[in-house]
Length: 212
Image (cartoon, rainbow, N blue to C red; front, side, top):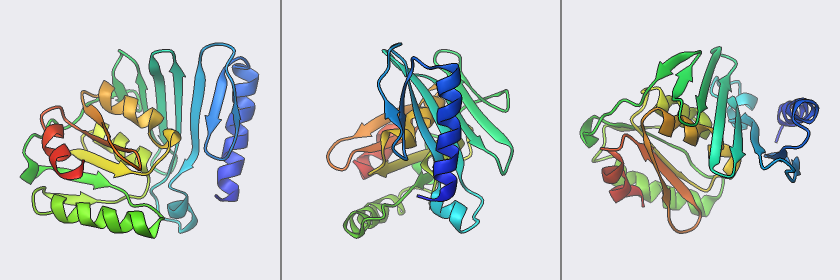
């Protein structure tokens, strides 16, 4: 957590309280209240905090609106690149207003895979073992350090697949909808900690063989 995380969350919380007072809220830095409307906002006020603190340009704000059917609206905003990824359930995904779609790559040897690593030493050791299975089969691995951006880039065709374990609802809520609305497929990884994998529908089964 940083001062920027808490300041960003406070600003988003104030705006939602003014504009959507009956909606629920779940946010990374602890803001939470129940919904009276059947809708809930899921907020990561600064995804990629370590990058932000080290002045590495890979961090974003992630906001999703959920209803009884799941994620309905998603926004992932990268202020440094002036890029805003948006999705609406049933209406596709966009980057700065222009339609985007997953790459459609179906060949593992040509597929660039994004992932992330835990702060827990034990979990990092297990994740390192998974990497030894993935690297020989797929083109390469990229680790940006911000899950919402990884999935937004997947939706835009900048990477071909993604997997990771150990994150929370606010890390994935918005970007998961981006991927599916961009034509991608998403699967939960069973076991503990919970995980997520995503890719084109043709590639995802092959990715799951190595990361499940």
